[in-house]
Image (tube, rainbow, N blue to C red; front, side, top):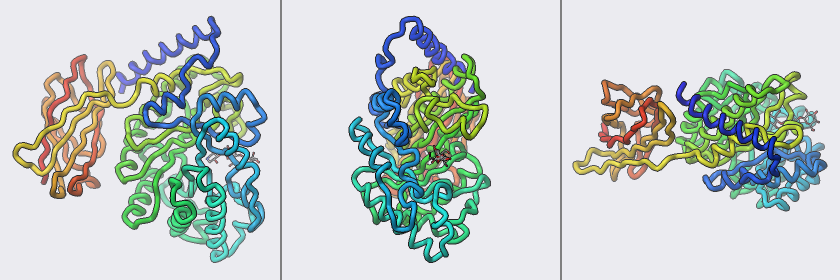
Amino acid sequence: MISTSSRIGAAVAAAVSVVALTVVLAPPASAATPLRDLAAAKGRYFGNAMTAGDFNDAGYRSLSAREAGVVTPGNEMKWDATEPNRGTFAFARGDQVVAGAVAAGQKVRGHTLVWHNQTPTWASNLSATELRSAMVNHITTVMGHYKGKVFAWDVVNEAFAENGTRRQSFWQQKLGDGFIADAFRAARAADPTAKLYYNDYNTDGVGAKSDGVYNMVKAFKQQGVPIDGVGLQAHLVVGQVPSTMQQNIQRLADLGVDVAVTELDIRMKTPSDSSKLAQQAQDYTKVVNACLAVTRCVGITTWGLSDNHSWIPGVFPGEGAALPFDNNLQPKPAYNAMSAAFGTGGPTTTTTTTTDPQPTGCTAAYRVTGQWQGGFQAEVEVSAGSTPVTGWTVTWSFVNGQSVSSSWNAVVTTSGGAVSARNADHNGSIAAGSSTTFGFVGTSGSTNSAPSPTCRAA
Ligand code: G2I
């Protein structure tokens, strides 16, 4: 972990010096390759939230058009905007955001259909029966209107409490646990081509609340409830990116859903200074790397793009400076860090795959996904052959003095250089022809050969 910081520290030092140069030489900000292109080269998108009001700021609008490949309307598709009175729908402001996005070659993420905030009192005052039918009608009409124009929807937003139980919103109190599944079913029927997401905050790392979401998604997959993705809002604080963010993204992906970082911002006490901005740059790097490390993490959206288009100062007095561009639309160290992470991050190519000369029931492929001074991260894909596996153990020997510091999705034991990784409770069963993945962070010297693992089914 310390070595992770020092690697990133070096990257940030480099990024900071680029900023210093920018100030001296004042090249146009557009000299950099836009984040949307860097992300696309990694098979991801970069996006930002835009409100209809943001269109009045031409400079901001063109900054978004240059940097973002995806736009999320900040408020314009919420219930109070789209159905202010029962059965009366208003799409002008949402349409404005869509039209602006289309003009800039951007795709649109829809936000949000069922939420306890920004929902008119006429809805929250309905009886249970009426509320259920109003919910289905709302989803059907709004998604119907935007069919073909919105590629993914936050169907239900923020329905969990911090302890991992359901939030006691009017939805929950009137309709009970089933309202989320009902909303997803209505959404699938309304637009079968849109990706359907559950979206929440404080669910970015592993913890009680994200456990609640994880268990719901797992149950939905088992029950056939149509869910395609989980949105991690990632409203974060400088220096406090959860160390388990990648692990959390991975475990959700392992359930068979996409994951998106949907509302990223990393706030600090204002005013900012160079050390807070450097820390923030490291934090943005961590988020981008966590996403790039998991194939099913499809993209990152920031909630706003520059510090003068942010909800933070209005809600957290004394805090702000949370976004990659400053009040003057100039790139901050966080922007350069994201640019570097999207440009260079992601899996490296070192891969070894075992063959299975004498059938052991499974094979394992070991891949180094990140390497820095003193440490590395690796991922092992465990695959079943033509018969299902009900438990597995992968073993290998490190020959360059490497060691495992922390792991996920497997129970790892070590003895000298010998490593044994047994399935965790949730991933012992692998269907024929399928695979599962576990990973770890380790220490290493400058030589870090990828070992050849052996897999044995239970
Ligand atoms: O609160 C930050 C975000 C948390 N996750 C869900 C997001 O939908 C949420 O976005 C924010 C918007 O960025 C704000 O712009 O949601 C807030 C409301 O929950 C939005 O603020 C509201 C103000 O509170 C209202 O006074 C204002 O009328 O924006 C409204 C429209 O400008």
